Image (cartoon, rainbow, N blue to C red; front, side):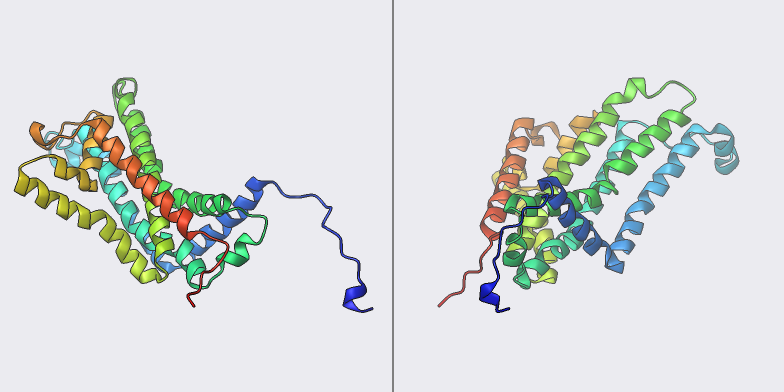
Length: 291
């Protein structure tokens, strides 16, 4: 029978839910992220500091082992907000390295291969596409940030010879909130910059540059103009100050250099808004070809 004689009808079967469609993108994005051995190596490297901190907590709470290993010396480790501030900082900055490697693998390949028109021709919206990639990257970063940080907090509460958790709940809440906030910022920024640059290697460098180049400019502005407001361009500085406040850790910078929490929140919101604007501009179901 000729093709034109067939009677075609719309599909009348059961449709999958929008969440299930996003889950398909998440599953394949997650598999793509793990497809590289470099990803595994980065994960192993990210957990090395956790092992060191775990041993430190064990020594601080076990006087017998401490006596044997340290030969009777007093504990050189104080498990307090400053200790967990170091834990949070180290893991969150290692998350930058993982983002710079994984995020381009999730988006740049689709952009460079012109796969977006094909993907978005399926019953998947632009929001669903971004949500699927975001969820995959969010889960990647969670494994090396708040998950091990909360694990260390729980281990300290278990190992402490005196009741510890009830009086330090602020530390646990700060670890969770600080990690989640940083993951959201990194995920949006990483996906946005990866969608703007087609080449994966270049996208990796652009992600690093987007964080550390403005930091250098902000430091120069602050030094020349003798003002603290230049540090608003310095993401490491504003995040460090915000994490210290969340955990109740002592402020490292001088009082005249500290930034208001509202100003820090405004900068982070602006960064997320710019990232979403870039994604909205780049994630399209069509390719524009110049004539």
